[in-house]
Image (cartoon, rainbow, N blue to C red):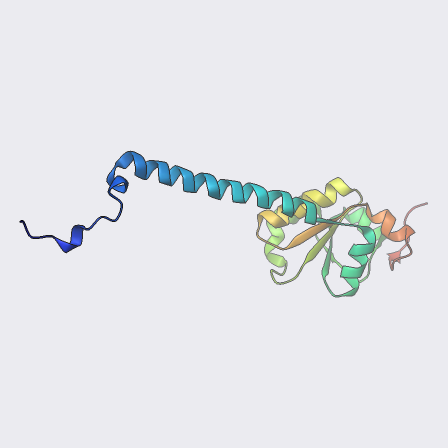
Length: 149
């Protein structure tokens, strides 16, 4: 009887076949893909807040980022908020904190979502306000200045 080489013990001989190894790699990749796909749905649902929720977050010290134009910002804005126009945001994400939630506000929900997505792509923790900033004003939340009538 030939001596056994202890270094070549195979627990599952079928795993020595390249086709089976490839099948396992593909299966694991598919599982990872499904997990990532499921996570996207959860993130997109949690990435918008109402005006009332945005105000509560603002009061608790989270950062409110106004991405409106300078003309809109100069007319009125919430006190103690950060302003970076949407068209400059991608180039200035490094100015924002990575350790705080950022609530993106704009004159329209689409604009807020676009700003939020830029921040999420940069790895920041961000959400957007569902309504435009005019709703913030109509709810009586604090502003500096006055919106045009």
